[in-house]
Length: 166
Figure 1 (tube, rainbow, N blue to C red):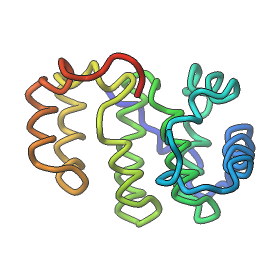
Figure 2 (cartoon, rainbow, N blue to C red; figure 1 turned 60 degrees about the horizontal axis):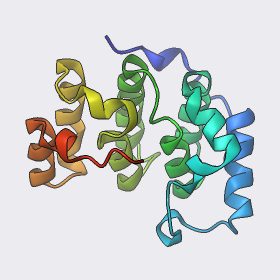
Figure 3 (cartoon, one colour; figure 1 turned 180 degrees about the vertical axis):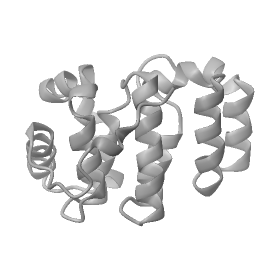
Figure 4 (cartoon, rainbow, N blue to C red; figure 1 turned 45 degrees about the vertical axis):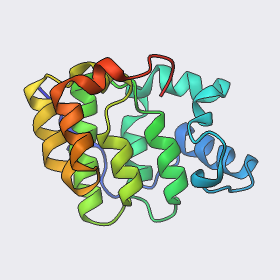
């Protein structure tokens, strides 16, 4: 069952350790757009990024605050989303639900939503779970190619997925 993350403050300004890390990371990289980076998931290789990614449940509400905030760029939202890949599946499905709402409100762009929807991290192992599949089939058609959607839903994506990283 997905965790209901509606208890995460909807209008709170993101000001905690995740926000500080994301801002510092973006600034240290000269505010480079994620599309122009050699590795858009480099954030996961930093010591602080590894610490956050290893315990994402402690940061999920703040991550959602970042995603809804117009003060953060779409690149910062990409980096934040990457740090949430290892959420337990129940929390990840709640993260998918809130991201769905934020995408509908244009708080996150298509690329951020694509990153949320395409299974990586924890979600890669739950392609068969009906609750995850329901969320995937709700959101995937607006951001992913039909062939990729079928590949994921068939389970072949799981078998083809490179086990070394994201």
